[in-house]
Length: 255
Image (tube, rainbow, N blue to C red; front, side, top):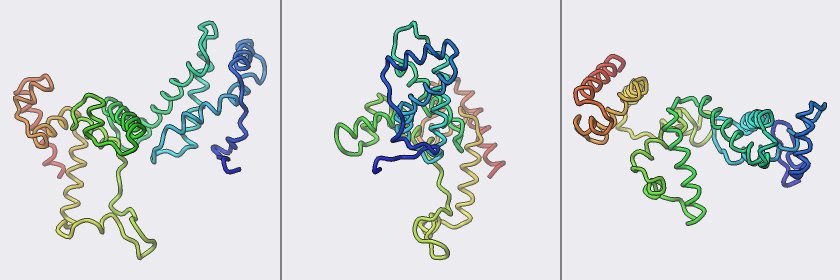
């Protein structure tokens, strides 16, 4: 009973197992339209879905939601699997299940992040996990960036983009009226007005287009000139100047 895990009301320890030969026979039954064959095939592959779900650890969605999305990916794999190709069903199904889960997590995130950034972040997390296994310690950002052969700032930016937002009023310690909030840990020099102003500033920046945000980041965080930015992102210096001015004007109107 110690290994018993319930997900979507299913006791995972009781899930049936099967051989590839048995699965292929049931798949033939599905193709022939035999009653109950599809449901049986899904049940026999729930362990496969569960093993994939366990790779994902996110706070935005619980395991039940991810498991159900994984089952949708499994059903799509069943409907599109070609038995004449000669590959194991799991070999074909795993990428489809993972893809379905990743799309769900991307589309359901409370903070919308571009697909390219999210892809970099996922690759960074995979490199981090691999490094932890080999060196038995938390890898540095430099090591992760080296593993991806990318600049450290790009990796850091991607990881920050998928980080879950934390409310200023989230409880850090305690309960009821005797609790410590995130706001309580802010330095005394930071007044409430300054925090409201900073919040509005971040919201205004988030509302900009991707290229405008990139230009502001390169100009005011990376410290690059308009000409350097022009060379990096492949547009003219005049376009960089115009986009920067428009971005700053938009921010001033909102803050």
